Amino acid sequence: MQVNPYLSYDGNCGAALNFYQKVLGARIEETYPYGEGNPQMQTPPGWKDKIMHARLTIDGEIIMASDAPPGHFQKPQGFHVSLQVEDPAEAERRFKALSEGGTVTMPFGKTFFSNGFGMCVDQFGIPWMVNCPQDVGQH
Image 1 (cartoon, helix red, strand yellow):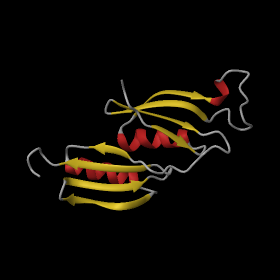
Image 2 (cartoon, rainbow, N blue to C red):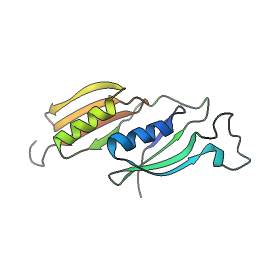
Image 3 (cartoon, helix red, strand yellow):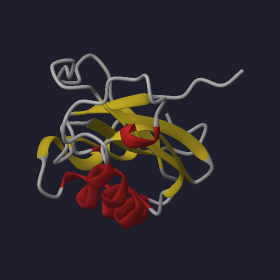
Image 4 (cartoon, one colour):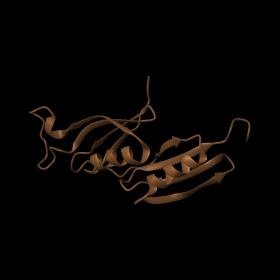
């Protein structure tokens, strides 16, 4: 069994995937635009190129995503996508890249539980946590 986040976007999923590819080194594995769906499917006007389903990997971990159909998008709340990065400098670099154009909700820095931790909402509205865990036995 796998547990994978499935992220919904307000018509900008393709831009988000390209952003994650650039700043996180994500690999876009699959994209299926609405225009390639079943002919009986009612594709909203102007949505043929929007993403009906996509799969990307970040360091081998799978995240799936899509553009929510018009009128169905809900602002993400109640979760964060969490990145665990072993090197503090790399964790901070990824945090800064993710937060560019977005909002920092907790600046990246050393905490009592972590060698580096920060929280942000990216420019696409997705909440992220970036954590550089302490070595086992440090806490």
